Length: 256
Length: 252
Image 1: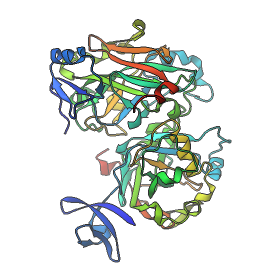
Image 2: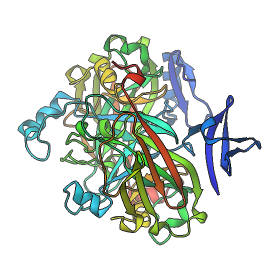
Image 3: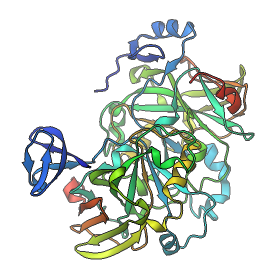
Image 4: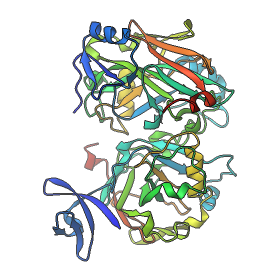
């Protein structure tokens, strides 16, 4: 069973998640604690759902290899090895760095199959921040498992915010800071598919179950970071999601 | 050893082959048709390979690949032996794909091919359906083609790796309504199992229960509502599936 009353947070050193109010959540986070992802299901990313990303492809969508603009939602799986929580440390595989995509994560509360657009919000338990990481890549023709599904490449949290606290998920602002400086800001208002439309279109062919997460997609122009950088992602006035980046050699020296 | 998972009289049971059908872990023996077959294991991450048999790649007109064509699937696609898979009424080309499913048994991180087989717990027969009408050239094959509810049939058995003498010499066969339509052998894998485990574990830690669907040989044909599709792999079993209509799913 999946139920959420207020704000869910799962501290790293506690066996079970807590369900607390906003003030208690902030007080916990002020201690500088690391967290596990506040969700338990499958995580799906959505490609090219930000109008800017689609516009950046421009006329290329009509040419090889794409040949036509996307018709149905284009999704990808962020598998369990990729899931990580607030204040996690992520290994940068090589000199191309890591692109930090900040996205709104929609967390499912009820089994969602063939959802009507007008009832879509009934299936949403809440929302969370997803740091959807990838090795930068230009072509989106072939699935990018080696680039998107690496260990620790899907940082989620710190909070799962109950949907009643989020008045309009189609107009939240998302900002990404690197080393304390804001480098990207976007909004879900420029999405190709709204939250309700995305849930309706996706659940026509695949059922989502309680605890699953589907992202609204990362904005165009997400920053690229390297070893030694720290990034944080904020949605509206929610507690930010932080992560740091290390090289492979630094990581090898750490206790796992 | 062969193990299945079945639902029978209000509970889920481990089940084993028996002369008259299946034997449950509590000793009851049932006919195969009297139990509901679930996937033999609770799957973790599902990794699937495209174009991993040379002849099938040729069939679909693809040239040599630089790295394995890998995509991931969610848990909602999985169903068991004797299940049904829906064929939307508006499509022209839906096809089965008989595949050897490799099940990981130990956490695998940066494993070299020489040691890769130590990380394999066992094998299953998989039938991984695709609907070509929905193909789009973004992260192709896109999830609408390959991640549909009920589109990945697994079973009937999970077979221990130690019971498969040579996994590189297994015949795969698919019959549609009794007619042999697809035939291949695991010796023709473009990227073999040890190389796949080495490749995948170089960037993602594989965990017990993760499944690698190793791709399908040539010989795919369209299937229609009511067709019985049987996928068979030497020593692993016969996996039965029937194609269902939109109407059976309450879709008009």
